[in-house]
Length: 307
Image (cartoon, rainbow, N blue to C red):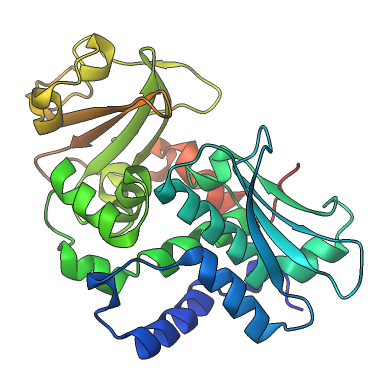
């Protein structure tokens, strides 16, 4: 088996996407998103009938979002677990992430002694899409399978700005969380934009689009504390209709240039999601300005997650 760094998560996701398009029709997302649980069970039986995924179950796996585990008997029988209390959209991506580990990494997981009966994935690896090595590959596979870019781009052009109504429709179309839809949009948009996830006035994590990153617009949250600007909606506890619609914050509030800010709060996950969109192309900076949270996944290749 090839090393994890040589696997082709996008190619594998494209293979399954083409199969689903053929069976269900190219317009399948007009009717329903990917049934990730059913797909994981059925497809694993097709490609590995002696060692399939035999169940997808909800479990209390504190400290983790999801896991791919196997039993002691041989040939191995696999199961996907997702942590209790996840929304349908978050659960779908979690199952997709663990299904990716099954498709791409199950031999590694079974044979490598650093994995104790399976792989356990935390919030950074799944929800924030901030992992590296095989966790990055699993995220790429899950995002490509649940939200194929050829369909996503048809729904919303790469050069167009968004609002929460648009993102909400995209999240519903693909059966994913708002966060997952935003992160997918940030991957292909040609605009400068950024998502900031916060609680109690401090940013937990942030992700810029490629254009924003290259213009020096990012927020450092790794190994540091970033306090939200006092004028930010989340800092003021303002989750009104005005926050959902957004406002133009003046230069000096978030960055040395104006930025359009929108915000909503998720009581379920006790966090706020702020979306920042810049008006122009902006300045370009050299690589030393780039945000470690974003670039770690490209430089720390091959790191194995711990349970």
